[in-house]
Length: 445
Image 1 (cartoon, rainbow, N blue to C red):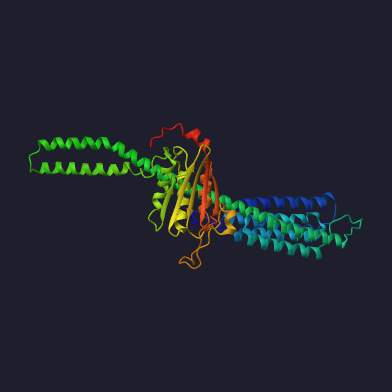
Image 2: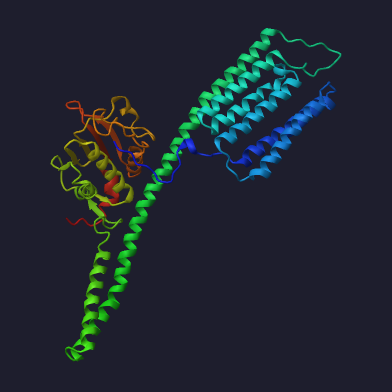
């Protein structure tokens, strides 16, 4: 089915989720912890520590933070490249400190996982992979080259090589797990957040149009009374004006223009009649014909079937989400239909159901179970057709329609009809849940 782009909404690949303030604050915390740790080992425990070299690396981080703040400001949202460079620097700086203080023998070598976690949570997969590879290289170098672990000079401490290898393996496994698992979970969360933002954007657009219709009708109503007074006064003046005089011509012009204004106001008053009152109740059959009307005459025929029913049609309270969701599904079916779209409505005392079936190629079988997820192309284009070289869109069409309809209490199911492979979307509501709200409204058909 077709996909709805959200104009002005950035894709996840172009997001800048991190603020420079966050990276700077994390680095200040690291600086404070590193300084405290080095001083505690050197002064508190009395172990030999290369203080000058350690504080040179810590001071380099202080300088780096100051440069970032002065150059960009804490409110800046760095690009993916700049954020990756900063996190990469943190990895190298931490690796340098560990090399000066025992390498993988140092229990704080576990902190090498922290930059990978930040990258996996906020940066794209490629940047996270690069960060994971960098940490793996640093851990490998620390396993073979480092200064001795600060320890009591009176005691001898030795680490078995197998133990060191175990630490190295555990760090590599942690890096791989965090880079793969955390980045995947964060990526899914970003997709959902972006798609929901697109849904809200589309819904807001519809609400603004509905509000505009209401303002136009209100303006037409308010201007109707003074315009009628002007027309009445002009007609009285025409009776007193001498025929053929300049005054008579001017009065006729006023009457003519007043009639024209009344016609314009009538159009404004009926501007929202096609969509109707957004708070009015409407029978399901009328609602389906209303949302399908804009998509007729696009090369396909939309057929309606309301035969398998019991009693009067259910009444829905017209809402932007309901109109948009149903209209989107019918529009998508029309886009992919060969000749016709079949919209079937049925109801009984328990269930209200609507089925939208097109005679197109159907859903891609491998995607049916995932339909409704954001950024999922629901059906492949015909490789032999004229649109074979065109992109499939953002993959938000079904997601938006499904989200909006589920807010009304609906449940959606997608399938291909076994007999011919055509795509079908089935929407169901529980009848009692809607009757409680709707039956209180007068039902005139």
